[in-house]
Length: 412
Image (cartoon, rainbow, N blue to C red; front, top):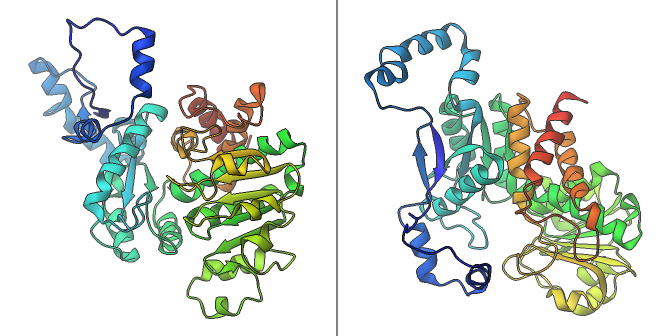
């Protein structure tokens, strides 16, 4: 069986669209009626990969034939990898506490988003996936629930779990499960940001490792971006939260329950920058926004020549792209209606596909960096200020990321 994406039935009597008609349809405003119609009944269904049209088919697929396979797996559990769908099935797990820009809306309201994530897995990575939303925010309860049903799938994609709980949850699931686990809001975002920054640095003629980078937002995405930048060789990285720059001397961090912020206070901001965005961005090469904050134009104007601005908050970027372009050489957002869309779909289908195809038990930092490099390389042939990463719809992306992750998993 496989998870499939429901598609509307085709009207056999209808005439094919002309290119102009199709283009017009794509540019028309999306209506509420269209959105709700597309979600009615959900976006997923289960498809059968083997025919069940004869008694022989039934005898092979179910009783008595299936008993032979079950006996074999009982004797050799490794056969579950080749004779069930578990090794190609991703569990998309959420508690609904940090859904898109909507915040804590609960598990039921998060389910359409998780269905959408499963649709992306199938469309871009060829992977089946099952949305699992849990009516608890207790980390240990989530770990126990997923651990108990783990024989049903081969990997876990954590989605829309609030920080700082998401860090503890991911760490505990990685420890508990013998399979790839990744919180995409953290690492998928970080991978695509690294890919985009690699190419943006080339566009502005600067060395990646020498960039001075400022990250607004010290939640799931911000911490993961800081981590992957440090792993790639950047040393001057400043994280900002709602109280300003994170640095070792900030008094409130000593009393904070957020151990992750204390850790990164020691690992980032080597110049001890204090204050807000104005102080942090003064002379900076890179701004990466992964928060709902707004950045004044004068702060962007204070950046270095050849500045790079990634304003990734959706739907409203931290600074409007047209404003950022007055002062920055390269501007990216998370939106599809502006150039340089930094979108997780460039990363996670290929990362999970590569990890599963390689039989990897973990998704390692080396695999994430390899994925970022593969994404960056696909844009090198047309590199410009308005094209630093390929389109999320580029069919080359998932195969390239898959191959890169598999090579990294094998150590080659």
